[in-house]
Amino acid sequence: MNKKTFPNLNYTFNNQNVLNDLPIAISDLLFKRSTNMSFKAGAYIFEEGNAPEGIYRVISGKVKKSTLTTFGTEHIFYVCKELDYLGYHALLSDENYSDSAAALTDCEIAFINKADFLKAVEKSHLLTQRLLKNLSHEFVVYINATKALAKYTVRERTALNLLILEDKFGDDAGTKTSITITRMDLANMVGTAKESLVRMLKDFKEEALISTKGSTIFIENHQGLFDVSNFN
Image (cartoon, rainbow, N blue to C red; front, side):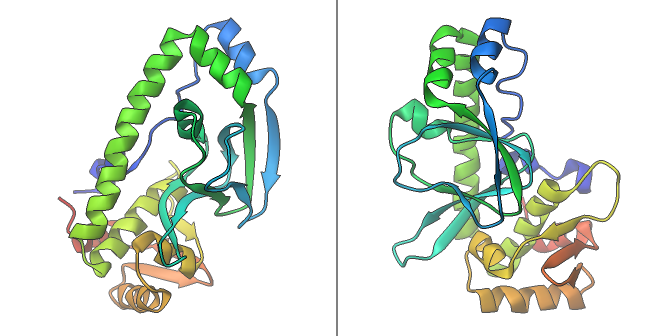
């Protein structure tokens, strides 16, 4: 199975178009008062337990979604890329955030306030349908991520998460994908200790699956990583 046929949709929210091509009145309601904000890597966009103030869209950069475990460690369960929306789950459920969102890299983020978003949902049946469809798909993504933690070994999970990040950081130019992520963040994605993650990356380098330069990881052999992931 090659890069083009790897089933990334099983691990991707795919919500980039949820607010596209809506009636003009709804689009104006959503975007006329939207604002852009900049976040440095590591800065929180919103935090677990806080009340939601609106929804966010990634204009540039990458955002990590995470929760705290009972041991106080971070579990990163999803990475948002350019054009992804986040933060609408808490608004629609009228609950506080059940997770945190922080800049994985330097980011520019668009913000739509709570009142405008909820008014648009109330007025647009099309938007409501899209949100229901996306929420249902995102539930499947969460289930797949949970199953991966239970089903796969650390080695397999490391390979699988590198494939997921290849999709997040890659482009359509066909160039070698470079992934900029700290070892701690990657360990928190994989669900292992940083020391175990570092040893695994060393093994992957010796197997010519990846190369590294500082905190940047280069994917050298997509098919080899896919084979290691034991994905089925």
